[in-house]
Length: 159
Ligand code: RB5
Image (cartoon, rainbow, N blue to C red):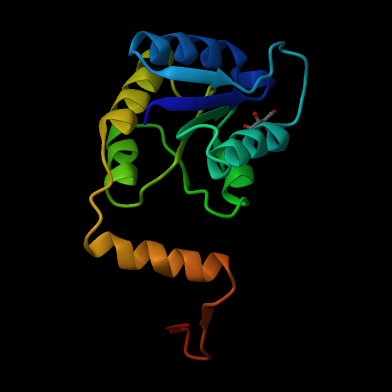
């Protein structure tokens, strides 16, 4: 990933600014989708802005921050093609790239401190999708997303 989109809600503005500088210092390009002030706002619009930028290939991946990381990642995950992970430790961030090919990492400004957030971002950025056996599972997720997959009466996955 060379170009990263970043956004938050009002709770995450300070951490967003720190992470933005951190990512720039790693030599990557970063696009800030806001907000610029700490005035109360709504996380879904910022999650959607970064998600849209990814599916429209304006950026390669995204970083999202709200109080917990939950609301903003759920919002991004409603956009077709987005696989956003919310995590509060680096191991899940790394594995989410390697196994799940996540294109957004999210975390909570009320959950993680600045140093831990940087570790999460570093592991996520450095990890690569492994493909192979994981591809079939991502295709199954796409089938769920596009309505092609359902559970049969016994709860089995059918396409
Ligand atoms: C805002 O109060 C808070 O709900 C938001 O930052 C986030 O934690 C939601 O998931």
